[in-house]
Image (cartoon, rainbow, N blue to C red; front, side, top):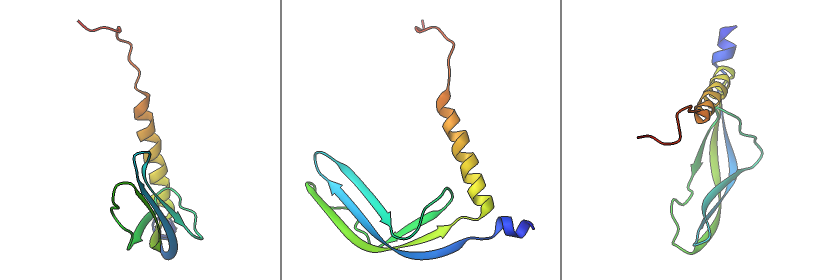
Length: 100
């Protein structure tokens, strides 16, 4: 019974599209995996994608990615960790506005 909760990691290789832009307006990189939905705890490794492009350019590259799907226990732990890390942002202070 416990084995079904701790195991279950599957490795899948899927095609992906990587969009990279490095301009004065935007600096971003987006990966679109084809045929799979990523959930908490999953790991993605993109192969053969450029790590840098010259300033002022944008690029779209088609490559492949290895997706390691999390098991049930790992997925649960990732959701709990995300929840507790989010609650750290809710720090409330009852001190006066100015400190001497």
